[in-house]
Each structure stands twice: as structure tokens, then as C-alpha cells.
Amino acid sequence: MLVSQVKNADGSITVVVREEGQGGRAVKNADSLYALAMEAADGGKSLKAVIEAHGLGDAVDLEKAYAEGRLISPITHPDPAHLHLTGTGLTHLGSAATRDAMHKKTSEAAEETLTDSMKMFKMGLEGGKPKPGEKGVQPEWFYKGNGSLAVAPGAALTSPSFAEDGGEEPEMAGIYVISSKGVPYRIGFAVANEFSDHVTERVNYLYLAHSKLRQASFGPEIRVGEAPNDIRGFSRIVRDGKVLWEKPFVSGEANMSHTFANLEYHHFKYPLFRQPGEVHVHMFGTATLSFGDGIRTQEGDVFEIGADGFGLALRNPLAIAAEEEIEIRQL
Image 1 (tube, helix red, strand yellow):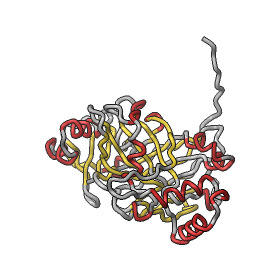
Image 2 (image 1 turned 30 degrees about the vertical axis):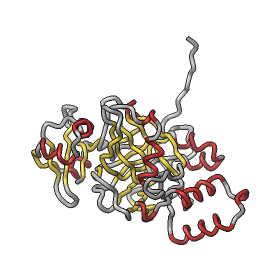
Image 3 (image 1 turned 180 degrees about the vertical axis):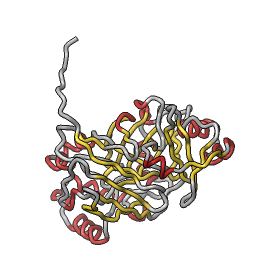
Image 4 (image 1 turned 45 degrees about the vertical axis):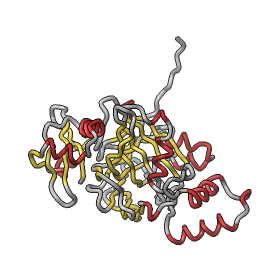
């Protein structure tokens, strides 16, 4: 089941559900997906059962809504400060050739000659998929921002004026709500663009935190339930109506050095991330970047990311923010 949200002319939200390849239907008496998910989490029911209890109404043309700019993020919070955008890195194996090269390097090189990134990757290979009952190694983790930085599908991803780069990162994101009792519940998974500044990151790895404080987009639809073991998708950049760059991207545990469960545990082990009523969009990493192929994006480029079984592709143009004068005042 795929779920999404459409903004109506009066400002209200219509929650839309559908199966892959079929038309969408509005969920009756639903103010938002957030409200439905909290009803499910606090009522001890599945989201599907809650939606079935509400019932389905009119047909909704998602493609038309997308073209009209009425699709919004598939989940929103009434207070954007209580939606968290976070992620993990160095979690994917990449292509077979890259995997072989990395395995060889991590197994043959002396520990002291490895970069911090390679050490982290090696730790994931060795301990990212723990057996049941065991605790796996923790991944690299980063914070992107709150719901104020969540950009709707179709809307522009805006790079700050001071940024050195604005590049796409095609990823899977886990979507979660925290019940009134502080229990994390996963709604499902969505395609995400974990928009980052790769030039800044390459200056020094300790600039990673700076490079990640950027907007992100996810959706347009959430696939409810578990993620497939092998996820196949595409990432492309369109410039002036023509494809500038395109590559397939893969995700799912068959292509990762960590399990989703291990990555989830090391995020939600912190009580800070189990605050009742909050929403989490946690991005799980990638092995495919146009930046790695020497592409430098420019304003007006359009990022397109999609994956089989996850509904409509995610599209966002790139914008550059005007320079701001920041004045710090004394109280």
C-alpha cells in the first residue's frame, strides 16, 4: 500500500492511498497521515486497519495533483519543529567492483593506514548485520534539520548562498511516529533526496556536519510495511529539458553493510528520539552520487529519483538562495 498527501485549496489535507499501478482514493475523515499514524500507534492497530476502518472515498488523480503543485510531503507534523530529518552514511556496498575493491583494501591494509571513512565502512562490513539477540556496530550518523527543511515533492531544493555545492543523494528513508507512550512505530519507507554539500564535506571530513545541514525531500509516496530486500531505482539530473546525468541506484539489505533494524536501533536507542508524538524521517545512505562523476549542479537543474515499488518518482529543481546578512544582536 502506498500513502501520500494532497493539499486542498482551503488548506486542508487529503490522505490518498493506492496500490502500485492503480489509481488513488481519498481516506475518509482523515485530517492527515500523521493523525492516522498516531491513531494506529496509540490504538495498537496497524495503519492499514485504521485506514480500512475510516473507509475510502473519492478517486484522486495523483499525477494531476503533482503537476499542479498540490502534492506535499507524505507525512507532516502540525508543528514542524517536531519532525526530525536525520541519516546514516557508509552503509551501502555499491557496485560489485567497488565492493570487491573495498573488501580487499579493508582486509589487506594495516589498520593505521585506513582513513576514518574506510575504518567505519570496515566496521559495518564486520558488525552491521548482527544475529538475532546481538547488538551490531553503530553507523555514522548525522542530523539534517527539522520539518522546516522538509521540501515537498516538486518544490525547489534551495542551496544556501554560502554553500560550495548542492548535490543529490538518492536514498531510502524510514518514516516513523512516536506513540504517546514513547514507542517508535515505523509507517514504512520512501524514496528520499538527502541533499548535501559534497564540496564542503571533501575539504575536511569534520565538515560533514556542516555539509548535511540542508533541505531534503522525500516521497511523494510512502510504501507501508517492510522494505524489499533488493531495491532497484534510478537517479538522474535534467538540465534544460535534457538528461545531463543518470545512473541506477540500489538499496535494501542485499546491497547494504547494515540491516535496517541495526540502523534503526542505533537511532532510537537515544531517549531524545523517543519523545511522544514526534515524527522521524531517517535516511539510510547511498552509493550513487553525480558528484562522484564530476558533475557540478547549477540552478534550474531538476533532480529525479525513483525506485520500483515506491510509487511516483521524486522530482525537485535546484534553487540558490540569495545572500543574507546575519546580524547578531545583544540583548
